[in-house]
Length: 370
Image 1: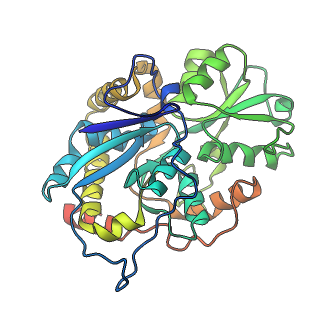
Image 2: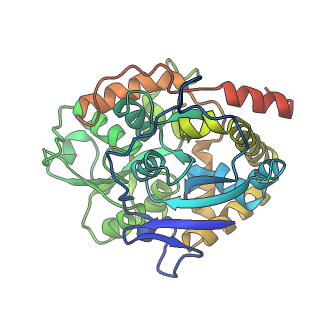
């Protein structure tokens, strides 16, 4: 299986260099493939329409991060490859540092499907008039916190401070800006009362240790790393902000979803169904295998893809904050979009068609699951 790593210097094939830390700076970097590139969906009967066939290669993007555990397990255990090989499709993978970069790759046709946060998926759908991306399934829910220095006890104490998020416009970035704005703190893109600096997760850890930032709104395992390895304290657990009205259960909110290029799905529906069967197999293994086996597999895969394994205590704490589910939790998306609009990171949009669970339903039927 060929893997491409997208870094600030561009794409690199093969194993990463030793300089790559767990989810580290080498995995950051926006994919410069042209923000103007868009993907159009062939209309039935149009000149663009082509017969549905199996793809020769499925190019899948994901992060070397715990919130992308289904991708880590699916590639480690061969769940994707086994489902795809029946139709002669090969799997190629690409590693990214944040969702907006993965969306750029989808838009430019560099990858066909990706695990990413819901906010980048929403932004891509809205900015393309509903053509750029389809969310097929959920992958991970929960697992995001605002962690800060000791002594910072409330929102008011953050005035004049500097905080980090993984990337401007990403899911955690929007969450932080929304939370601060609700408490009367200005966070416009030029600075504001609280400075927010988009920073690679591993850099956030090092900057926090060095006293260069005062906290960060981070996904797991990075929130746990700052708490256990750098002495941060939890100011906000995002789970406390979701009462279940939008997602069906208190504390549940989407963190990672599986999305696809609509054009790819139109041309290769069987390949997309195979991808989802592999996704379901990975989720089932994560949720039913012996905990020790899950921990060992995830840590081995993180060591391989990100360059370093996690401390057992970090991994245990982080997994305790996450739920791995195929439910896309679509009821949360209007709220997420409204938050992004309020933060001047998106325009209002109709989200009808963003989530397409038809492929998921077929994959579940094929596997005999609900």
